[in-house]
Length: 318
Image: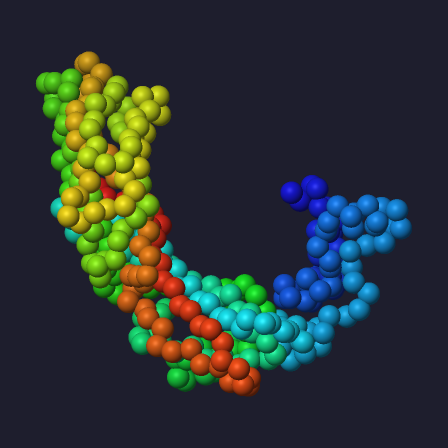
């Protein structure tokens, strides 16, 4: 991709840096400065010797809000915000939490006419720690009132990223019941796991994928899944189970036996189970937007807030 657009990449870097120091880093300004490449423009530039760099200075370059271009107009005015949280956790074999942390972001898609001034407030802003803001956010107001006040860029941008540390009581949205056993005097082992929802506020857990790196002594696995599909690779020793959506009324399970290499000793440790999942309309930290208000413009925009929790490095020790 870079190789095909090396000229455009060079032009972007040339506009972003001045004598080696960052100058123009806002995407809105760069989009106005440098026209996106097309086949027709490439042909014309080759014939005429011109470049993708615009002839005029972007309207936002000298503005007090350089991240937003002036003269923005939309027929439909709308502002969408996505609260996305990723939970990293290690659960011990008894089901207790060893450590759990949350990495969160709030991504925005704002298409509003003019120069709107937005405020976003939360029900429980004290949950947020180690917060990183987009340059548009007025930091002093956040410090004093824990309210996000900002003139947004036009289009898609990341409003903030945050961290919820292990010092807080992080809710664990899923659990795994497991029974994995190896015998010293037998070439067979037992494998049984069940996945279920936990502290999900009634929301559906979907996109569930279970993987586990089995010991080297495992030759093969004969398993039966109550739902989804599973595969065991005898070369890499990786077990993968694509569960899909969890039905709380009928929990998915994977049961069966393991064939072990003859003469090998019992593995020192049981395998670790890794989970991937996502839960729509839930921020597992408990973060919730209270209200979104707009000032500076007279129209009423359409506003929407979405929440999603997904697994990061989520491990269950067996």
